[in-house]
Image 1 (cartoon, helix red, strand yellow):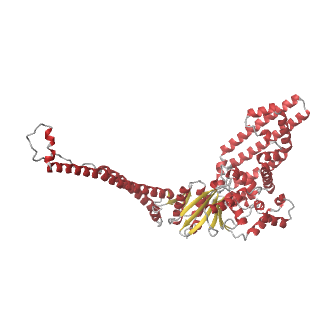
Image 2 (cartoon, rainbow, N blue to C red; image 1 turned 120 degrees about the horizontal axis):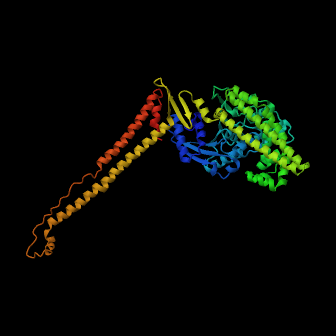
Image 3 (tube, rainbow, N blue to C red; image 1 turned 135 degrees about the vertical axis):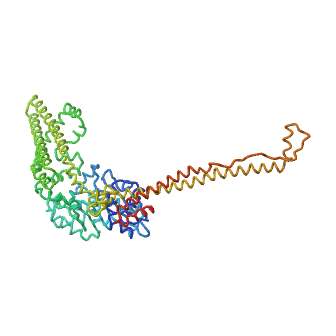
Length: 611
């Protein structure tokens, strides 16, 4: 039943959190065993084998952005496969692009397909049979990737999600042909884009009903302060399975209350812009995005990366420049209109953030003012572009030069205004204030809310807090304490073994050699004294032919061996080891005294030595 405790306790949550560190197989196994001990109070005696998506032949991480880790965990006769589908990585742009065009809008399902293919390859890699239970563990986007293939393909037997992005009916429509057929029949779709016109509530209800008997057991833990939870209902995502909702930040009402108050037309503008971007990007990447949103030929501008290159383009490629400005002149006004709807509601949006305590009144004012300034400058550029195009078509040479100069000046003004706005926003501290929203998406905040009592988590470590003595609470990093105790005792045990080996080596190399050589010398002395006549030839060297050797006595003093046992040195070295044990035991006793009520705490220190 050891494997059951992985998902019945918080072991799986901490394991998902740890997977983001991209540890080596050996380090991940060690970390898993520490986590298992801390959460269950038992030593995991089994084995963990790891297979990463970077090793897989079926997955192209650079193309899809998918990152996954398969863990075959076994103990005794138990064996299960755990696939961790990693969530969005903050430093991976392809992940964020996928969030828009794939995770919500369903223009691509590359990562869900990658999750399926990687899981199947992992099963082959470990050569496991169909009876072995396969579990999906996922956070954020990773939860959705696993769910998409889980409910459609039966890739997993059980799924566990943390602050997961819920199923997008649009993504499922793109991924699952059978589901797509049923959607077409139910809602009478005549083209693929028609799915975006179906009322969100109706589409969500249909999706949930269709997959309710998929056979996959889904368990989710979600913070009601998580921004993904906040947008789920408004943008039409479909929650699946059994969900445990937790208020991880009771001091705030939750970002959902703010999102719920965003006017529907404003939200729809966000969606429309997202659809436009997603469809264009799916058709041809950034070039197609520029073509469909601004009418710009990407080939004209792809090499513009400095003022010098911009100047050369102006001087030597006037035809390309004029074509680009004309295209932008036609395409920018509708785009600005969409942005203005959002801008016009900035006071309502940031006002609600202020009311709910996420930002200060000063920060609210700065955001509203800076957004308004940027919107005004953008319209100024649009007017300058229109005048430039008009001068190019009907004006004279000097009119064109003047229009070019005005446009350049307006672009410079926008650039300056943008940088000033970013500085003012940064200096206001609003990004730090909004950090609580991001924190509520983290696994740590969930762990801390679930833990309760005197247990909490900092980073990847478990922390206990003691209030003994009535003074300032004392926080003890128990994960670090157990690591120190285990590594310290292991090191001291190694030193003790090394000292024993050294003593044996000294005895073998010095004492025994001394005895062997003394025995050899004494044997030679005995031979001389027993056979003196055998050495008569030595007298011939001194010209005493008339003398005979009757006896011989060897006067040789062999001093006893001293200081060869390195006794003093060994005593000092053993004192050092003893001091180490005293320090560790004092350290352990100090911690256990702080937490006398924790009966199992002392046992943890004993058990960690068995790992």
